[in-house]
Image (cartoon, rainbow, N blue to C red; front, top):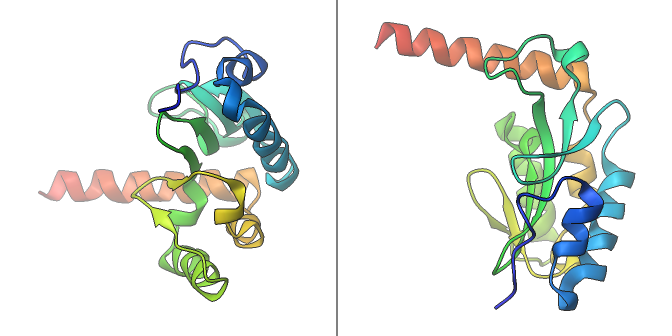
Length: 158
């Protein structure tokens, strides 16, 4: 079993250094891949206990929890690598496109409600991930705000 990255690491570099020896360089390469795929305008940070890419507060405006909106994240968990791409769940079309691309590539997609779990980067159809992430921070924040308002409206009616 692997050791998870240190959720208390103060920086992304420190998090990477905390990943067990057998996966550290692969994880470092995955961070590099994400840096190349995440569109311009998102901030990289250590939030929620792992490396994230976030919508800056000056773009999103105030949020309900006073924290930037998480757009994407990568975590070294004990049994897998977790790729969190919130944008893939924005619409059923985005989610379906991601799933379909993996099926067409003959890759089994281990996708949960908020993440994709994998052991090595060859299990992921990265072009489909890039397509799912092709949204600027302002548009992502606008969509998240509309979703939150809709959810709050439903709760008030319930």
